[in-house]
Image (cartoon, rainbow, N blue to C red):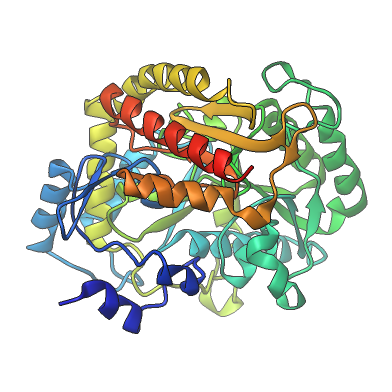
Length: 449
């Protein structure tokens, strides 16, 4: 059977222009192991983007496989209203050991965007029920990404995803976010006083009284091109939110679970959000699940007699799924027992060094930025002016196609090449994938001149 032809006959792939598949049909993957994916012809691809940043501990991880198989023989799913089960309770107990201080109540959903939607609704309803119905707006940063349902898209700020839908999106207060590569204040990311934070202060002064919450991707704006900013920004934001009675929502969907070198990105700042959203690495990339975790204070505002109408009437069919919970429990065990994050931080030093050595000498590489094992290489037309490449040439996409031929899955963000591998990647694979990426980048840049 021609599996690629059958795929294109039926399937509309996400985040794709399907016409592109006429020249590069979808690759049919048959199995995975570690950072490797194998297609139906046996060809190997190094998955250094963790299959959209969710695969934390490698494909077909034996321990996670075993945990799901064991749970499957006991309970596959049960309604989570009025019922519960041991895996969900155990997961919450285990998470309490690692989440930021003050967070303690867990509301389950089945994907990242859903957790964002829950958080926005939860914040609005909290303020409404505590005597502040005027607080019905939300704030978010420029270049933010929080998902693609209507509410999540509203607080997002990447035009590629949201521009077309602006007529149906919520009116969000947009704060000019930190851009450390093209800093308007000539600051340096590693020694920055966050002068750009005055942009947030101005918007809070104007709209703080009517704002329910601000949502941020802590330290790392992923879909904007892996833009990294200092932890000091989060500290200042926590203080500002307290001053104006505005909830601070942490979108840790992509940044949590060791991606930034600590369990959660907020750990770098030493402060806690009011609501934290988890997904992706939560189950090791195995099962669709997300959680919005909040404080006792927020939870208490919903606790009353049923007829008073204060309950949070939000639900998902697969909330608290036992299979996903079992995977998530095993992920936490592996991180702890195998000291994964500490080992990953040691690997990160080597990974960043070889990337800088290989890529920074190229005339079209403007910056290499890193946090944890994540490394981003921004391609530009001119180093001194930081002028972007001509987007019509689709340089990043061409590099992606060329790298696939050589067995590496990159999928650049525009003209930003990045590596966001499973935390278990080893030096041998780091050397291989960076050599391939360098070779492909040189070839495409030369051909595009």
